[in-house]
Length: 588
Image (tube, rainbow, N blue to C red; front, side, top):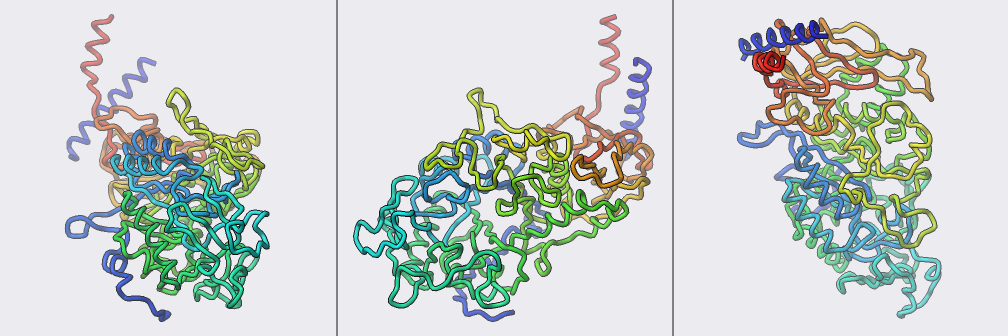
């Protein structure tokens, strides 16, 4: 062992000396409504002085976390590790129930909900902003909640017409809400309805086609319909626009700088933009389902959610059994046809695309190590500008809300993420695919964004995003390496799945010894092995790569089913070997 240690020291000294040497579709829209989105594109790929600095926004959705925990996470983890923004679940008061979707059925524009009180929300926004993390609110301007059983079919036009109780005590009924603020009360006439019949909607849209007499939804043919039977705000009315404006204004005044627009396909572009674009948001994106864009929504509202990108990554890294096709992932530049990178945000997962059991082609935590490799690839891939990571809870049924809220409960208190000792009680980083069934079904916080390697890769993304990609020639099927520019390297090995064997078995770890990568000499930290960002002045790392003269790897390996990432900015500082030897000699 002493001989091996001496060899490593000599090898590192040699590398250090080498390193030192190296030193239209036309739509009538208010033209004034587009002032912010038209003149200042959201989160451009480049910016800064001269507009030449490459940007690489990394957002994370903390699904159903409470506000107190989000504030703490911003202070202790998101801010220090370089996350740019946190997306929170819908913030308005909603109907009662334990399911996740109750938060998408608002009953007032009060800001007290299952996630916490209005004051806790305000404090969370302030603390996240102070930590350098912006806040994305999932905003719902399309509809209100369906009525409770007591209000269905109720013809009354008096106080008894609102027998339903919201999460924080606000009352509502069939196509009417009493409101929590005074200004947010709404009678049936403010929702789209058949003439003379304010208690009945014009039409309903939902599964299986989600169409309303047209072959597409982008023509707003469904904009007057009740989505899933949820009463549809008549946003043509000035009174409705003013209600929505007051809600949006409050969010902006509290420090919210970014929005996700729920059900954007079912809202009129011009009417929505008249409300949103009175404020200079830093970023806005829309819930989007893969439709071909018509060049209007992104011009007047914001970016598209590109859900097809994650499908392609999942297929390449998990579902595809032909190992020879793995290099094709290097040509990946977009997901949905017609949506380019300048107009897109790429989520790794989203709440409407989940399954009760693990499904290899659908990216969720239930796929274990495969999912983790996919989110690492999302972070390491240089061709995409804006990415949205997912971090939530586990489920045995996709209807379930957060831990502590079980099916059948009308009111509940979600379990906190942080335990009494102040530690995040999260699922550990997975080591196999899929997760063991017991672990996958257990009710707990998963915290995918805290899995080993995610925080370290944020620094890689900031350094390497936007650089040209070139494959590094290598041997061995199921192995893939590529460079980003001349200073960044990624290498990965496809994993295996115990439930869905692909036929190629276990590929094992990949030794990179002898691989010509062309990076400057040095001892590099594999940032994809770090639990947090690389510390300034670090001299060691969980996994390291040594590159010698001529840019050839002298030591380093990629674990099966994992991803390695190094860049010039993550070279480790020199160890003082002579000082170490003197200490060992003195001890002897």
